[in-house]
Image 1 (cartoon, rainbow, N blue to C red):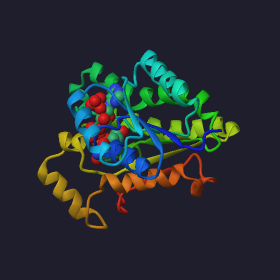
Image 2 (image 1 turned 90 degrees about the vertical axis):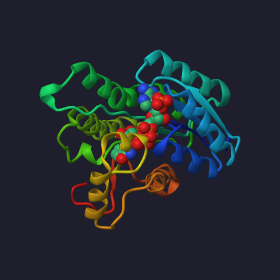
Image 3 (image 1 turned 60 degrees about the vertical axis):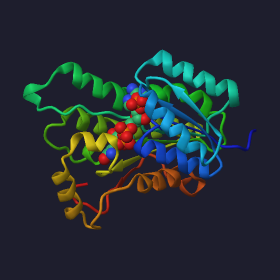
Image 4 (image 1 turned 120 degrees about the horizontal axis):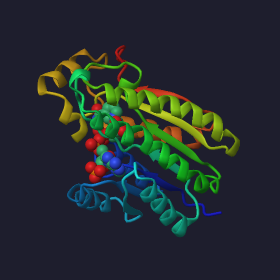
Length: 248
Ligand SMILES: NC(=O)c1ccc[n+]([C@@H]2O[C@H](COP(=O)([O-])OP(=O)(O)OC[C@H]3O[C@@H](n4cnc5c(N)ncnc54)[C@H](OP(=O)(O)O)[C@@H]3O)[C@@H](O)[C@H]2O)c1
């Protein structure tokens, strides 16, 4: 069995996913880095990650498209025959009040944030079964436990992922595949900047018990712990990484 750890990070060309990919590279993994659409962002990420290591391959695939995900997993199978770590990170958001909702937007958010992670999990299972230390970490959100206004699709998708984490942990335990979830609070990334004004961001920071916003590295550190052998008896859990905020 290959000793090198093989990881797949979805949405690894930006924000939290890019930081997770960086930390996995720094820890000696070979990392498959997935993205969906933005080629310019992908080229920037590629340049940045090359400063750390060449041990990665970038794969374009829309995670809500079953055929594209299946093809992505086959590429991993052909190169290494196994997957040790799946990080289901890719996500999106379209804010709207329920009254004004375009149902297609609601479906799009659910399609990426929830169904996309389900599809990636399904097609990763055969590869994870070939690992000695298989683990999945899903990235959800504080809004999956404590919903807010104007973001019902996002809140529903993230709540779904927290529960999907628990059901997949139960089902996949028979293969020793551990499945956990990290729920970040507001973390400054392109996705967060789309939905928050400068004033709202400052208010959020000032109300946080630790007096700061989350950083991508805070989330990556939690993910790396959950993937590691140090978490070998932890599965089915949702860890809120939020500076102690009671609003989650
Ligand atoms: N930032 C926060 O405050 C925060 C808080 C709580 C939870 N989260 C969660 O953390 C995760 C990462 O968020 P982020 O803030 O780092 O976002 P981000 O900077 O916008 O990055 C999102 C990544 O996902 C990829 N992506 C989006 N749709 C995709 C699709 N259909 N198929 C494949 N890849 C796709 C994007 O690539 P392309 O654009 O090229 O497709 C990009 O690489 C998300 O699941 C988000 O819900 C974030």
